[in-house]
Image (cartoon, rainbow, N blue to C red; front, top):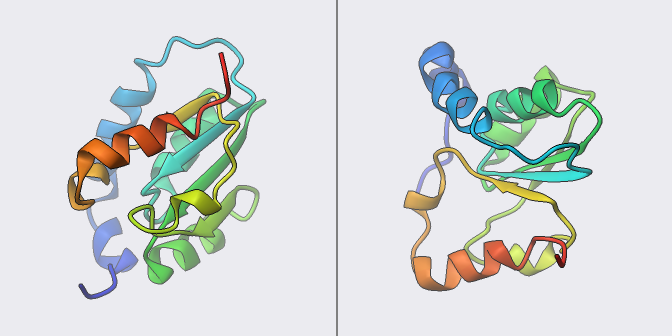
Length: 125
């Protein structure tokens, strides 16, 4: 698959960000310490999480080099990492309080395994 184009993606930033806002507003956990944004794209959803959980460490991951470059440029105060969760999920830490993904999981095959691995990224308890 060709790499995603962040400039094209961000032409509709408002429309693409609103679902992330809606989803983040459904999170009822108070004071999470660590959050991972899986499929962060150009960082707009990671920014939403950072606004809502200003005291948390937030890591945005995406398999697109173009998207991660854009995220790092647009939000230099946040952390982003290139990571294909369909094959590199084991390279991630396993101590997150929230695993967030707005519009990524549908692109990853084998949901039975993927969901188990995503749950495995959560801190014990």
